Image 1 (spheres, rainbow, N blue to C red):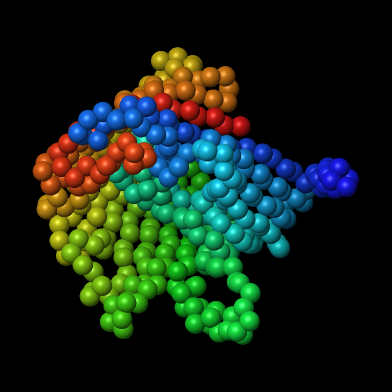
Image 2: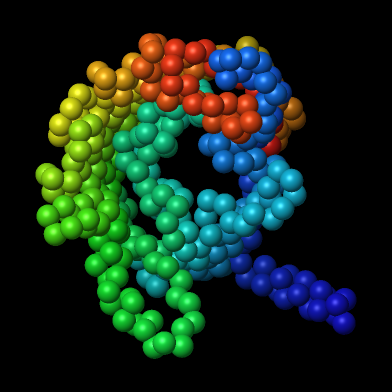
Length: 392
């Protein structure tokens, strides 16, 4: 019976694939760290993704698109380091285009309709330090729908203009008390109040202008409302070999909601430039202006140099200065990557975070806590990670 079911499933898949495009792919990066120090002594390390919460040595992304381009499904799934099936990864959604100008999507989104502005370099591919700007360069000037699940809409009246909206939704659960609809009504303001609404406009040969409202509806009491923020950005594409982005953010909430140090205005910019085919320079900068208190800033510079077709060097230096009451933290990376065939690379790096005073911010590297603790003083903490990178 099991063989019959398997044969029928295989036949159905083959028949379906005749009318659709199905592709498989993945990008995996794990960092086993055998030698590390928390500032008090040498310790054994662990294994991590660059973003820090657990290694994923096995992953597959499945992308289904109908033959007429009107519908599709994206599924990302991964396994944990010890072999457990952990669930979905960046994108798990379906989409439908009722007309060519409108695309509807439902599920978990990562880079929502490709609207995010990234400037990632250096440590982004290794153990990401706490000194990096924003989400370590992802969405540095224009963020996305994060990891929320919900309903997305993209309208493209002309090729250059994209209008988008996203509202978070939670899956309903069976209930015998008859209050399911009542619960939805009570939370309706939070559904739309935590959505994202915006537009992008591309000027051919120049760049892309972006603007959006990011809802963060929350009320502690009647006098302390938090509504969200407004983001605006510009991605420059006019200069060959230059990737540049600049943006600003304004937080919207009642004045009484701000506490000392809370960001009210954010400004960020970043650029990568290929000086030669083998040599690239990158830099980013982010400034946080609070309503009350001292401004904070982060900045970093990095370089990539190809010694040969297979061997490349990378390095970066970053600094975080939260405010005048907290001493800054400095991080740096020196690493090498060696291409193994066409779908893999191996790397070896040295990374460190050091507090620049007795009141340094809590600097750390993203690796399992067995190896590291937060660096709240001027201790020197470091790691020597290997880098396993596979893609297909």
